[in-house]
Image 1 (cartoon, rainbow, N blue to C red):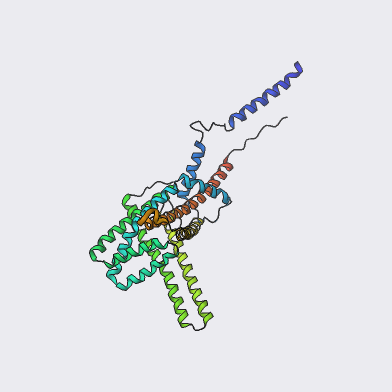
Image 2: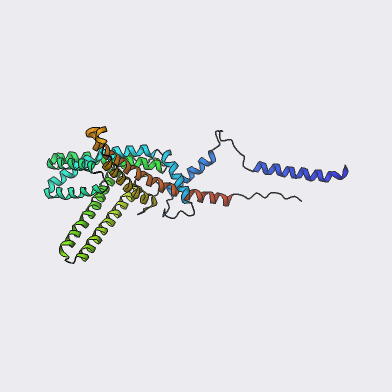
Length: 363
């Protein structure tokens, strides 16, 4: 019995070391307890704080984050942020702002020059590439009616109504992007509204330039056919001019998304980006959704039996809904890329600062 004392003492020492290590190690907590998710919530708050204060220079560099992680987070965030419902809200505001804006544009054109009306009408025709023809017909009909009755009084009223309506639409975009980026609106009401009015004016100019580039490319392509007598050279010149017009229009569309993503959310620090993964996917998704809706309307033209005379308005509202959805999905992709990169950096920093626990070895 006396010879066994050293073994017992060694066993007791090892038991004390194990007990100390267990006390230092993180405890497993039942997910049902109130404080179960506090560490993860704290991490997520830190991540979104970095997204708001420290924007990445480029979103194309995922810095080692797997693309499937970003895709999974984006898919979950679409439903968590209720982007489907918020897109319906944006679609309503887009529709609400459309006709006052056309009313003001038509009044200005009617007072300035009657020939300008035909130019802008030709510009709107290019929307038929993506917009359903029946819905575009309703827009053009409203355009014709308001232009025919332009006056200075209607111009003043239409300008105020259009600016206010359009600013309400952009305020809805600001609120939705704030949800996407997990930030609260801190700008004063007057500042946010004046910003919305100014940005709406800039966006209308960008849209007009986008349509003008397509009209100009067709105009110069016709001139090439008229003044170049060699058939192949004329065809090559016309196709090149149209291609340049399309590329310019895509550039203006990318600028449109960039302006919205830059000025929309109330971030503490902003980083200008001409083209992001979110805007690229949003543009492609918008074009595909618009073409798909147009094909559906063309081959399943039975909406009038369900909605009657409101069918074209429903189609136009659906197109606005899809446009708003693609805009928000693009913003969600950008925000989730930034969040994933910052989360990886935070975890790497915590792992580097975490003290290493040396387990005792048996002697």
